[in-house]
Structures are given as C-alpha cells and as structure tokens.
Image (tube, rainbow, N blue to C red; front, side):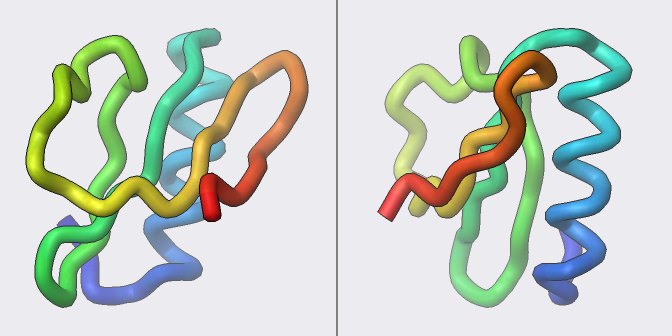
Length: 61
C-alpha cells in the first residue's frame, strides 16, 4: 500500500506488464494498492484505474 498516487500508478503499470494480466489500482481510506483484476472478488474498495498490458490504462470513473 502506498500514500503516493503517482508511485502506485507506476507500480500498477509495471505489475500489469510483468504479469501480462489486467490489474486494478484501488483506494482504501487514504492508501492506494494494486491487485490483479481477477482477484478483486467484490472487495469493499474504490477502484480508480484499470491497467491492461495490451491496451494501456484507463480511469474507471
């Protein structure tokens, strides 16, 4: 988890490219985290961005 959005975005893109799978950048309280999209399973988090290694990143909002 990170308090820095720019750092979390870079980590998300790197993880998506490394795993070659979509990942999501989410926020819980005042912290940001990254998880593979298929592992989210309806958790109570606010998803901010999706990063797909094939088509890039996009804002969910």
